[in-house]
Length: 183
Image 1 (cartoon, helix red, strand yellow):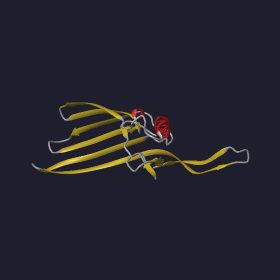
Image 2 (cartoon, helix red, strand yellow):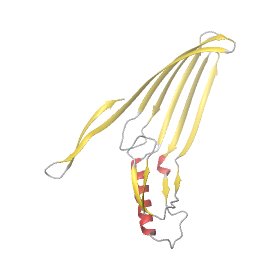
Image 3 (tube, one colour):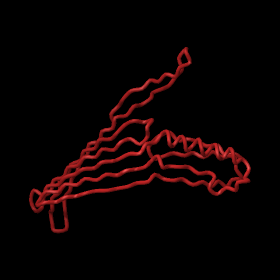
Image 4 (cartoon, rainbow, N blue to C red):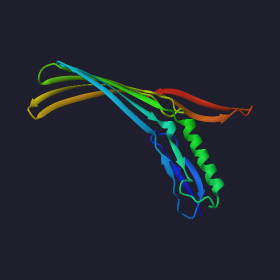
């Protein structure tokens, strides 16, 4: 029997397929990216400011088809090749990123608060460049001691490069028609 495993990541990139011959029992392990988060906040009188960062180690992702296999298993070389191809794909397509978030808050009165924030989120997929700049603002007003009216807004900007189609010219060179868009 042949099985096809479709793997897709949460960055909207194209899914990739693996064709595997098996008895129907497929086991594999995945090393997910490591994440380290840190933040600071400072508050004085009616004013507060915060800064946080999140480092994600996408290059640490690994796909392991051989973890639970007997060294005498049939097709071991094929499994090893599939694992190598997938791990190379992950290493070539994903980069470590550092997300930055900053915010401020001002208490105008005892009941009313204004907020503003900014975030920079770099693209993790090196084949899909497009960092995100995000601005947010909000106001909050206490109506009762346990009831608060809150309104927020957000502006999101992402520069993206899209490929409409690819073709080969007469010199057998790959050509691409691409454009930039703001999402």
